[in-house]
Length: 149
View 1 (cartoon, rainbow, N blue to C red):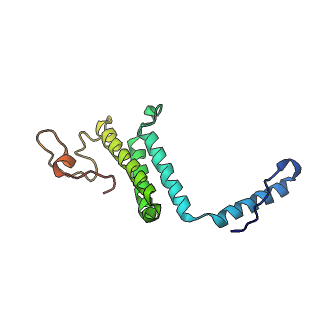
View 2 (view 1 turned 60 degrees about the vertical axis):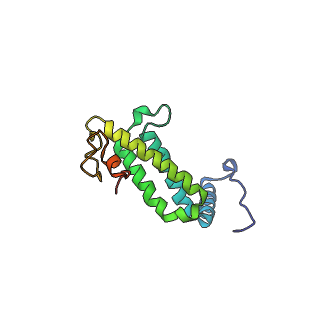
View 3 (view 1 turned 90 degrees about the horizontal axis):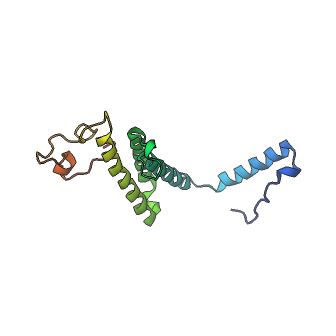
């Protein structure tokens, strides 16, 4: 990385061509220093945040609940997390915790959604034969159902 930083772009004194060239040079510098790991982490954070909205967890997002979108956000974040988790250090635990909260929200949302699986028995990956006392398959097996597994 060079010690020399590009001056800020001042569009008021530039032609359209000069402005385009300056922005392209700035983008080129950003791409040169950007690491793929940074993009993957940002994508995971974006998926977790969007998943929280699709779960209706953030205040004012209750009308945005969408179990299918939530499932995709969870599975996407989990798939990407595997690629970079060793490099995250303590931040990995925070992301895993957020994903766990989304998974629990998904189980509740999918289990109670109109037209969705009732009680979780027909969720993908769920094992049959729930507890007769009212517990579902995950409770009777001692395993947590995880989307995509």
